Image (tube, rainbow, N blue to C red; front, side, top):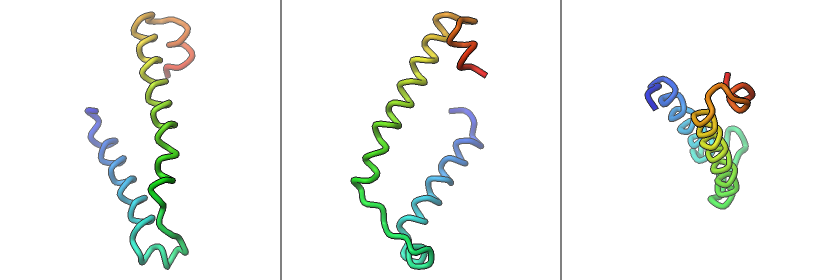
Amino acid sequence: MGNHVLNFALVVEIVIACLLCYVPIFEKTLRMYSVKFLWWIYGVPFGLLIFCFDEVRRFLIRRNPGGWVEQETYY
């Protein structure tokens, strides 16, 4: 995680999303309501799936450099 600009951008994006979801002035102005904790849980399996897929992809690329997986998934 050496890309400090990307790390900063991810943190800012999460902060803005949380502000829009939970600050009362935005709720009233934008006619939104707070996101329940249970609704946040639905995204966790998808995040884990994406993380595991990427780690397996990286493992296969390192195991077989220049192979099919690298040609199809690495840009």
